Image (cartoon, rainbow, N blue to C red; front, side, top):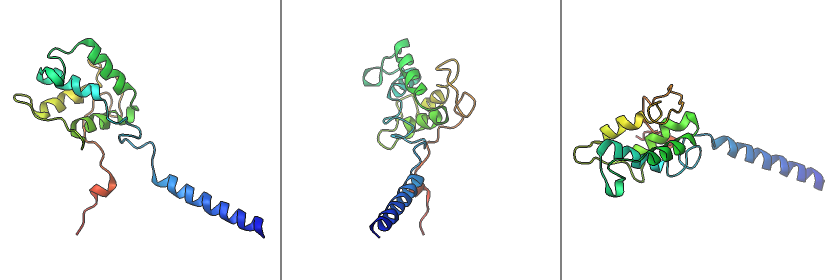
Length: 148
């Protein structure tokens, strides 16, 4: 009798674990899962430096090849299916989105960031074929549900 209850309890536990595992997609393109958190921080500095020519906390006015190499290493560590999403989180992340600067809009930065995966920059494959046509970071399902 005890072994029957033990088997039943084990079966219930396995069912609960399987249900939980099915609700969490560890391959999802989100910071902390397939994308490191924070996503590609050196690429953020590199993008602002290359696009805006700013110095100070935003990186060197003329970014060094080392900064580019670090950015490319960070981006290469992200799975190819998530690289454009990582750049999207870099641009639009909730914690610290890139901002407009005088004479250097976010759209100008976004245009450059879309090209980071191309041969002239990091030469990394993406599901878009080498260039991020969109930098829309996926949003959690709860945020996309409208309420009435």
